[in-house]
Length: 326
Image (cartoon, rainbow, N blue to C red; front, side):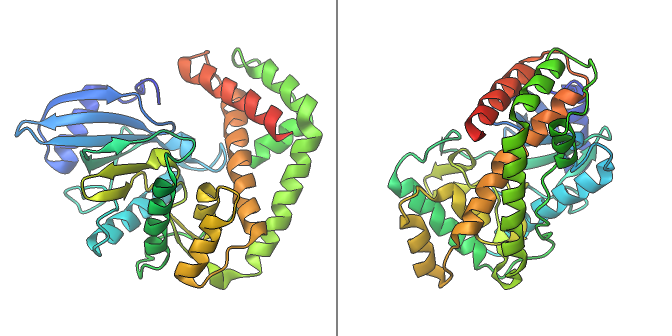
């Protein structure tokens, strides 16, 4: 995220690091990197560097009425699997440092899930295209290792839900939006213009989900978001970061992000694992990614908002995404 969360001031975060990890913070600086979680670089009094993340649990809910405890439980399960993978010898997994109570994260100020990671030196990348074929195939190798790992617990199973789908469908059906911020009425007009094609995409997604449900034995442990921005190149090789979306799911949940459309990645995966990726499930996860982004921002602008930097960026993404989708 571009700005630090108002509900988690630096002093409160430093106190949480002391309480849960025994870390005495010498300095802590917000890092406006990524999108979705908040990040800080922390240095303790011994000079050790750490990467600290905080997720706003309200933004992790599947619906606006879901309890924050449910969002926290999903986040905890994902990070616990990352820790288990690392402990099982998968050195490419950048896993959270266990807290004093052996948990992979701590709940702070009620509304945040905070995790601590070792600070990794290396080359980072942005969301978008992979930097080279070597980058793409390097990440494929990591995913093959994840998919074939014996570690699965305590990962949850993908239920194919699109968070905030209920709000997206309500807007497409013409439900009025309250005057809750500068983008509320713009949202209503945007969804009115594009309701029919969005509804068709949702119907196509549901048809693909039926195909996935018919083949439960294909499910494996998946990272969920192995795009370039969640990779690093270090002296020790490629690394995967941001494990907060881990689920047991069809392998296509990871593969669609690597697939350049020429079949090379999907064929290489089949050669490495003996499992042939299915086009309908590649499409399923491509659609889900797009529809999830749309539904999340629809929910954002149906709630009170003040036109922050994040609001402006989210509106830019939402409006361009809907135009492209439809």
